[in-house]
Image (tube, rainbow, N blue to C red; front, side):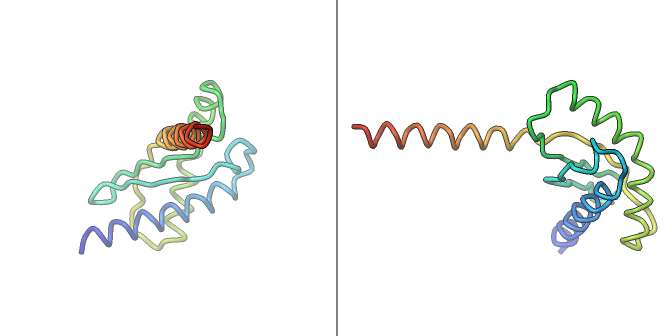
Amino acid sequence: MTDIKLARSQALLQELLTEALGTLSNPNLNTLSVTQVRCSKGKYHAEVLLHPSDFTTQEQALILKELNKAKGILQEYVLNASGWFKCPNFAFGFDESLEGLNRLDQIFAQLAQEKDKS
């Protein structure tokens, strides 16, 4: 039962953070897409994973710095939209698992091409 509540909370946070990022005036932040949110059991901490979108490591560092500056605005937006009494503390990062999936897709495509050739 608690896993369902946690999954709902994570899905709601993902939706609200995507909306909140879209309302920011910073062009580096308002185009970001949230791929996953992982909350702690008590919803005190939330790890927010963003789509890397071919950013360089320098751009990613700059974006993370700007997100940490905007953390208060994002938390206020989530509190107002969700009606919760406390908002989790956000830790932002980029989702590296998507790159692994893309590499796997490329490998499978190469294997399929080699199989078709032989």
